[in-house]
Length: 111
Length: 119
Image 1: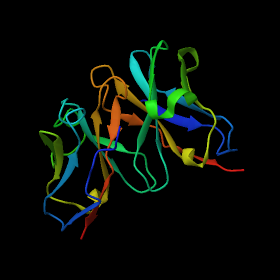
Image 2: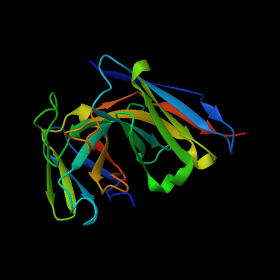
Image 3: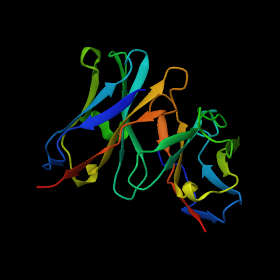
């Protein structure tokens, strides 16, 4: 099972919005509404920010939103803040044989 | 609140066995999925295996038969064994939790432990 494809980097100025894509196949992203997104600051563990495509865990700001179309999922971060500078990983369910596949990661820079 | 803490050797010799334990504090282990996930330096995350209620397990087929995951609820921990390790197994190893309702969402993570495979 190959990793999901994400752009290596994205950037924006404070207050702007950015969108990160996560492209898979019909066997993972396109086949299930089980896409999650994680935020990872340097030398820290990942933090869940979106699950089941567009749901936010308690405590995650509304500035983070998710969506999906076909085999591509997207994470939008609105009103960029300095603390949003991190690497973001998507993840999708990919069937019972290998349930969890992660994306290649996108490093977000706040200019 | 629930916290996870990984422990185990930071250095393993090639062809040896990597053994890690994740201690769960602040809550019950029952009815949750407990996973191991790793991240080679500078690379993406890779799910390794999960255990559920001690009896149900699943693992990444790319690791074939090298992986064993087990759970001891009485001791509030679960463990990973990875045999025949090579340099490619060098990574930060995380333990993580997901719920029955949202199995695909890892909502709690340990801080991670770096394991280096080297002679």
